[in-house]
Image (cartoon, rainbow, N blue to C red; front, top):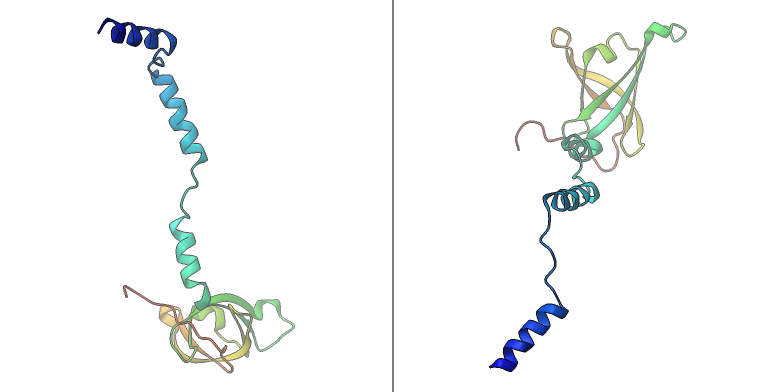
Length: 141
């Protein structure tokens, strides 16, 4: 029994317990862990990744190609399996020619198939949609 007590005391003397952590050490350790943590992507980045295959670039040309005011540039979104595109009416209003570039690089001419100028909404139909059409999911699926 005495030998065991001497053994414990000798062990405690040779291998002392580490000192308790101070609040400053804890704060520093937490700060380092937080600084090295990779934040999740922003919600807007996640939305963009989800909608990207449905996005298009729209270029419109007015009646007189020499006039800079007759050029419109905007964006739209594919809304159905036919490749129809929802966009703002002011982008294509009075356009003699409408060109579409899909997210995969496919280019096509388009025509206005529906419009509500008072609500600034137009629907375009491409002459040649891409092979893979990815309509956007609008609203809550």
